[in-house]
Amino acid sequence: MTSDYPHPIIAREGWPFLAMAVVFALLVNLLAGWVWSVPLWLVALFVLQFFRDPPRQIPQAIGAVLSPADGRVVVVGSAIDPYTQREALKISVFMNVFNVHSNRSPVDANVTAVQYHAGSFFNAALDKASLENERNALLLKLPTGEEITCVQIAGLVARRILCYVAPGAVLKRGERYGFIRFGSRVDLYLPPNARPLAAIGDKVFASETVLAQLASPAASTQ
Image 1: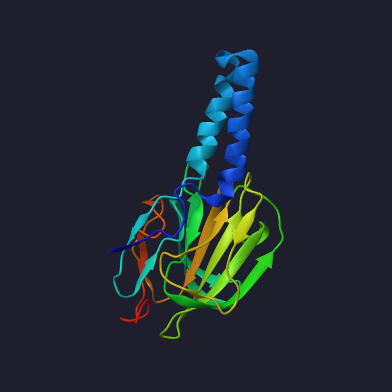
Image 2 (image 1 turned 135 degrees about the horizontal axis):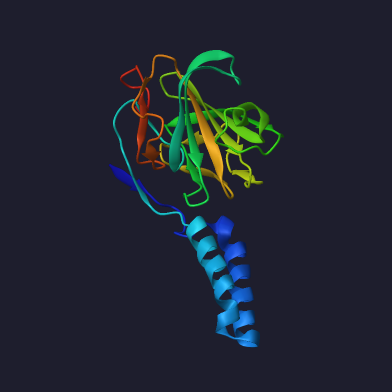
């Protein structure tokens, strides 16, 4: 395993929110006393934990597909990839407000397309969120030519999907590529002959948990 940690332990996406929470708590503490500021300090602690972005140990097993997000597995099964119209193995990970919300690449791959779709904000744990919620899809091509789709999906509370890569980008497994604020979901569409290694209800961690094994012995890395 190797670790990949080229970013702060508190995600930059959260710095403005954390600064505002701390400033408000300090002001209330100074003006009204510590008793009145306690709820605001609790809010600041929540913001701090939400935007944490700890280092991870990244498995290097050939053909491994890593979880792109922290959370719980809510879907494992056959599906049609709506972005390529191909048969696929679909694995979905639901993130609640207590999970790390940094998104990381599940494989070594080239980004061939980025497709953003405006939409609703249903509970991301629901199946209809995959096609009806606001979402951003990365189409990824592995060195072997195999293709997978990785989709960031906004949730009931999440109202901002952040994606930092464009077509032509080269991602390494475990590399941070985006962030979703305040509860959401990530869908993976894999080749139909991929073997799932996670089950519905499993707790998974971005870049550390292997969700599936690709059939090709060299599909994830060369």
